[in-house]
Image (cartoon, rainbow, N blue to C red; front, side, top):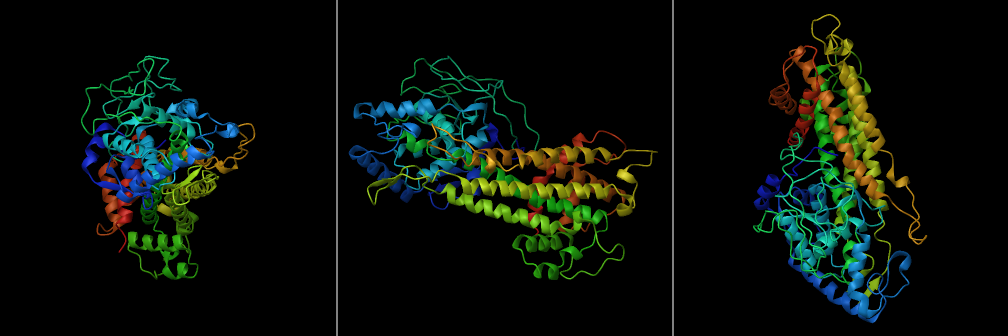
Length: 576
C-alpha cells in the first residue's frame, strides 16, 4: 500500500526507549497513534483512565448479572433476542470470539495491526466498554514488546471491525498466533485457519517497510512458524517465535487473558482497525501534500513562473484558510514578496502553477477535517452497549456507525487526487520548450532524444490508480444479519483505499521532481541555498544522478519518491 515509515524489527526495538505516549482516553492524537505504530514510543495507561476502566468493569458485571445486556446475556446481531443461560455465560464469550474471528484475505502488516492495538487500548481507557482492566495492560504490553496478533484484511463494512478484533481477542486468550520482531514473514496465505486445527500457521503481510520513510523495502528474513498445540487451553500461548524469547522489545506476547461473556463483545465493539489505518494514511498523505508544494516551487523556478498567484492581496480577498496558508508558505519557500511585481514575460502561468493555492489549500482543509473526526473517534467510548457507572446502566446505541469517518476519508482522497492531478499538469509544462526554453521533454543534444517523455505516461498511469482509489466508499450498501443491520458506512473500505493511495501519489510527484531538477540543471539555475527551495534543490541533487542521456528512469523516480518525506521537513521548517 504505502512506502512510508518503519515496520522492521530493528526500528520497533530501537524505538522502545525513544519516548512515552500516555494513553488517557480523552486527548490522544493521530501523531500519538503513528508513533506507537512505528515503535517510536512506549504506551503508558493514564492513572485516572485506568480508574475509569475499573469502574466500568465493576459496573458492567453488576448490570449484566441483574438484567439483559446485549452480547453479555444475549446473542448478537439477529440473535439479539436469544438469552444466554447463566451457566453458559463464560463459554458464550469464547464462542463469540471464535465465531467472529473470520477475517479473510492477506495478513496485515505489523504497523497497521499495532495502530489498531493503540487505538483500541486508548478507547478502552475512555471508560465505556466495561471489560476487565488487564486487557488494557495486555494491549500496552504487546505494543511495548513489539508483539502483534495475526490479523487479516477483510471482515468489516464500517459498522465495527469485529472480525479483526475477534482475532485479537483469540490471540489474547491464547487461541490465535502472534507475530513479533524476531518472527519473520513467509509465503502469503489468503486466510489463517483455526490454530487448533493445524500444527502451525504462517503468513506474510501485504507490504514490508524499511526504517527510513520512503526507503526501499528490505527483503524478508527467514521463516519462523507459529507453534500451535492442539487442542489449545486458555493457559497456552501461540507465538511465531521461540518461547526462549523473553526480554522486553523482543516480541513476547502478553500473558493469556481469561476473557468471558463480559469481555468478548466489549473488546470487539470498535472500529479500531479502520481508525488506525486512517491515522497512518492521514499522517503520510498530509506530509506528501506538503512535500508536493516544495516540488511545485522547484518547477515554478524551472519555468520562470510568476509569483503573482501567491500574492497576499489575492488571498486576503478570498480568505479560505487552506489557500491562504498555501500561498503564504509558497512565498516563504521561494522568497517572494507579499506583493510581488508583475513578470516581464507571459502575463500568467498555466493552472499547474497559478492554481496551487486553490487546489492544495482544500486538500489541507480536508486533512484538518479528517483529523478532527479521528481525534474524536480515537478517544470515544463508542462500544455498544455503553456502560455508564454513574447511572448503573447499559445504553444500547449505534455509535459504532462510522458515517463521519467514511465521508471525511472520501472527501480527503478526492482532494488528494486533485493535488496529484495538478502535479501531472506541471510535468507536462516542464516538457514544453515555450516554458523552459529547453529541448522538448528535457532531452539531451542527441537528435530525436526522448528525455523524460515516458514520465508523463508513468505518472498518468499512477494517477489512474489514484483516481480509482478515490471512488467514494460511502456509496456502498449492505443488508446483513437477516436484515437487522440494514445499512453500512464502508469506512473500512475508505481507510484501505486511502492507505493504497499513498504509494500511487508518491510516484506521481516523484516523476515531477525528476523533471524539475533536470530542467533546473539544464538551465544552470541554482536557487538561493538560504531559501527552503534552495535547500530542496541541494538535497535532490545529492540523490538524483547527473546523466541526462536517454536511459531508464525507474531508479530516479524511486529515489525521488523516497526523498519526499525529507521535503516535508523542509516545508514544515519554512514557516517564519
